[in-house]
Image (cartoon, rainbow, N blue to C red; front, top):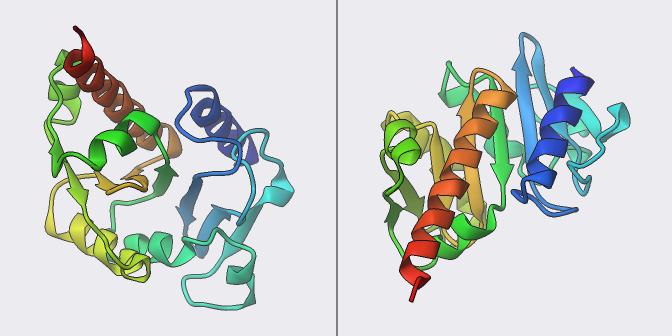
Length: 181
């Protein structure tokens, strides 16, 4: 499991989807969740940078990502969620402060994403419920928190990464199209 966390974390970093201290990810197992620890870089992850927690709060949650409740709520709400990635993709975040949704104009984005909604969450304490509720009420596996970042879930970390990556490429294409003189 650590090798997959390391592989995906390194890919997120080298693709510019997270910086050296942002983002988090998790995977659900039968008896809990493996999640990156708070403050740990996703680049060069080691086994000590990931903690296994239960679905109910206990002392282990203190070491987990600061967005641990958000991950847990998604897993409790969405049965088909087995992996979650949260990234701070720069082009996507930039577009999120201008638009209410991102509608890809490139072929791949249209095919795989169609439209990605942007949630304007004023009080970040509400995010832990708002994002899980959004996923529960829609068919979407990816959403953007305005000015903050992207949350995606899938069957595995690589498939969640594919969603985040596709959205960032689509966002970049939109940005470039709008700024070509």
